[in-house]
Image 1 (cartoon, rainbow, N blue to C red):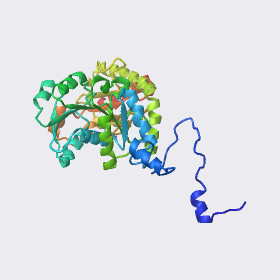
Image 2: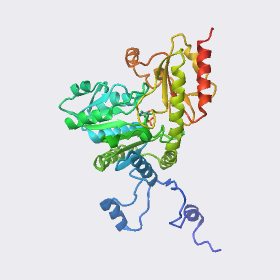
Image 3: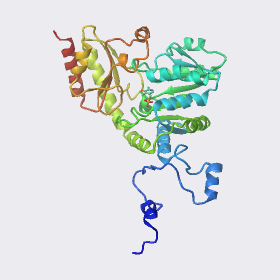
Image 4: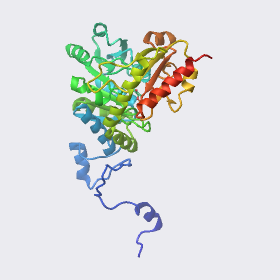
Length: 384
Ligand SMILES: *Cc1c(COP(=O)(O)O)cnc(C)c1O
């Protein structure tokens, strides 16, 4: 065999696959920072007709697939994937506001979102008011001449209140405001906010969409016009998702339905068991979130005589982790994690008490899950 090129050249070019069409069963990972063009006309087509791919920060087949997959589940025209749930929220807000605007956000939102709104939006000269969204007249009273956006979550964290989205949408329409809803806890399996008239739906795909606690990603879905603006913000801010993370999240989305069916069913049974346990002061579990059930998160407030340290130590195979939505059942302690940024007074006002434990129910056997928690509660309230 005559080797035409020299060693250094061969080492760079030899491994490149020369076949341009290999039909794999699933989408391959386009782990590339950029895409090659046949000729200058193809570059023109990219800019003029939005055809093909140029550079992965701008667009990549795997990240597009994730955005599209979630848009299809939400019943929305289009979607984009971003580097995290928080970056999806940020670019969604920047796509719907400009400097000098004001947004109204629910006071009962994810801790990280609260920090984003409080600490970062000021840099963009965007003001925020926090209001209890279950009190729609309070939301209405908070509207100012420069208000442009209402922001809330379909099922709130950690107290799992279900927001009445049609009421929020109606108020927004009356005042020409846009609406953005974080649908992370519900997922489109339970609730599809876009179908109810919400303008932008945002997800932390880190949670149920990914489903296996191995990918950090965000998704934003909605109408093309708003999404085109959001994509511009994403490209300019560089909050793009990596192809591999997108590929993992796409794999997760394929099993969302079966995972949710099992997890929601398990959560229902666990909530029922807690309600019959006198050592549990309060059970937070939605009643009418959707016809397919009420989600897979159960939050409990344990009696004052429960030793919370001992409770967490007695949980056998249930892990204490400050996240949710994986296939394994896990617990978190909002007071010192997700809601750490709030003062004690703010925590008490929101109901983030010392006995509050958020449980993310997994796909294990329902009876085994119930047994683990009942045993830990016994252990933690036992005669010491
Ligand atoms: C986790 C979470 C976020 C933030 O998502 P990241 O992927 O961690 O950036 C936002 N909203 C809700 C409801 C969440 O649970």
